[in-house]
Length: 162
Image 1 (cartoon, rainbow, N blue to C red):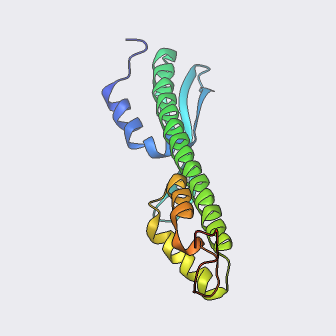
Image 2 (image 1 turned 180 degrees about the horizontal axis):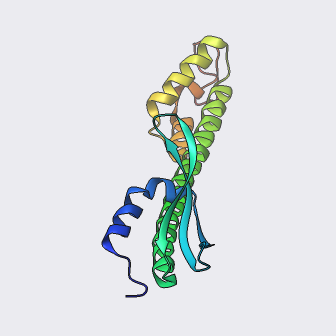
């Protein structure tokens, strides 16, 4: 039955999946009797010695079985790459969001003016008022009472709101 993986070989491949997802290669080797045989070469960590050892999993002389086994391994690798790309995209989006929010926070502190105490108070109020979106940050900047001029309280000047 060419091209179909025997259940025993599939079980061996499943056991080696963590190693084969990352690295490994399909090789054709010429046996001493001059016949071609297929194998998958990979590196595996030896738990006892703690070193990486080169190992091979013999697939036999049928090229169809070898290609089917390699197609299975390539499918695992494709799934792993897709998962890693999704994770990288999520991390990049979170990094951009944190950078944007940090810039908004810094702007809120600087626009508030004043000394160190006032800047700290503005930063704490900003952190408490924003839920994590830049729109909330801008909304806080517009409606914040700490954005009022930092001067002595008293009677408002004519033609001023406060």
